[in-house]
Image 1 (cartoon, one colour):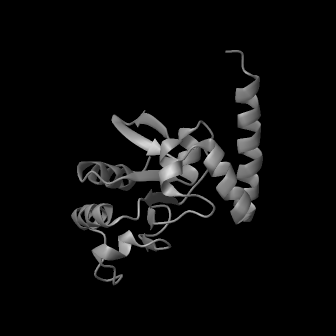
Image 2: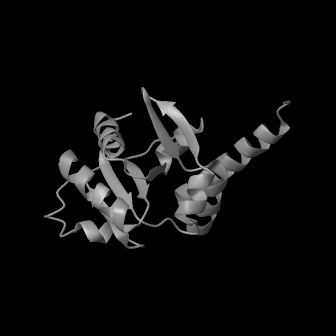
Length: 157
């Protein structure tokens, strides 16, 4: 994983931010790697978490002033903040189509990645989201996720 991505995850964890990694990197965490040009992080849009997100991103060096983003913005649903350029772009989201953060958090994959405990969007939630989005890359991901879910169902326990 790109060092900028692991640095951001570290600073989010250090600031006790409640977040889920989503997108291509989450697919890789589930054992389905594919090329991606960014790190997508979905943060809980609550006032308390918003302050922690803002502090973490400031410590990371994100250009929040240049992007005209205030701490309270991370407490509102529907915000997307992007900084950097592919392959090191970072997207911080306060909403993911078709999902509610609290329910997705309960279904998350919690796993060790590069020596840190990280929360990832579940495969079922990723499938639901990608079916709603329907972009070309999402259609390919839907096929991949369905195959993986079928394989897991068929595995002997």
